[in-house]
Image (cartoon, rainbow, N blue to C red; front, top):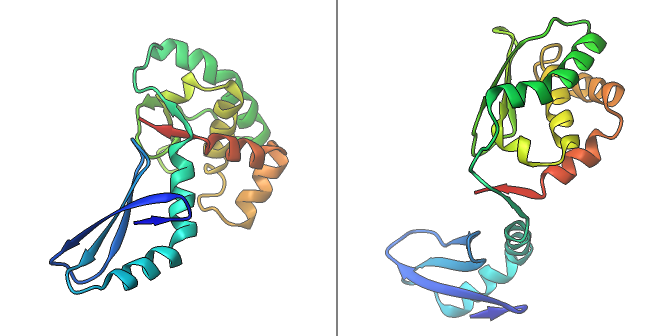
Length: 175
């Protein structure tokens, strides 16, 4: 099936509901549909979900981040500490423990109670502006645990262009 220039593979299975998969590695789109679903209903289903399909296909053209990490912990700490010191001082917080590891679904995490932040080691393959954004973001969680209005006001005060940095960071995918 082809809709709006997008080739869609159809597979009928013994399932209750139809679902769509977009395979990031090659941009392939596949619909798995119940055996009793007519081709015209599958076509309607695909047309209704076309914006979702296009959105997910756009993600496949994003810049891939390599999994190999060529930085030592000391290298990563050396790059991170100036930003961590800067934002801890602005927040009037003591420097938390900073850890590094490869994470496949997030750029950083914060454990306010334990006073620890973890940074994705893949950040060190990206432009430094993204590292600064993630550090500021995670350190804000030491003061505001949730993503509420107070958290975003804090981000605005610390890093006024954080929204554009976040948008730029979303252009990278994990591989």
